Image 1 (cartoon, rainbow, N blue to C red):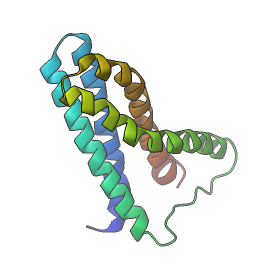
Image 2: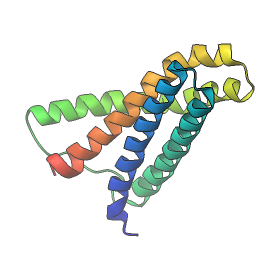
Image 3: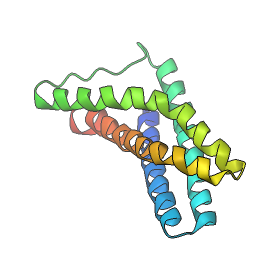
Image 4: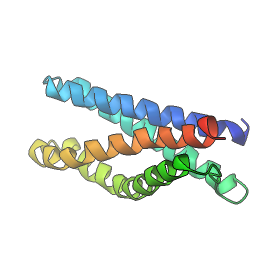
Length: 141
């Protein structure tokens, strides 16, 4: 597979993760615990696949980054999204682990306390990852 295909695969994995996170949230709100667990495990898997593909892409990309060269309001929007996305993505990895661990141990009160923070951050990171892709490779290439 050519390296040039990885950004679209990464965006697809992020979009799928966002849908699974929303599905998991819907399921838990409707007391469907098994379906919730399935959605969240699938979201974890797709996010992990994304992270692996993302790191592979950027470590093999000449210069290790893609420059956003469009000027004006798109540049302001792009960098706002990017500079909120990146630190939240870094925080997200340990946060997801801290959320999954009590759930796997069936400590659901502790899981619920952490998940209230994890879910919106995870959703934001997944959605803004797709937006970054569209801004870099589709709308303003």
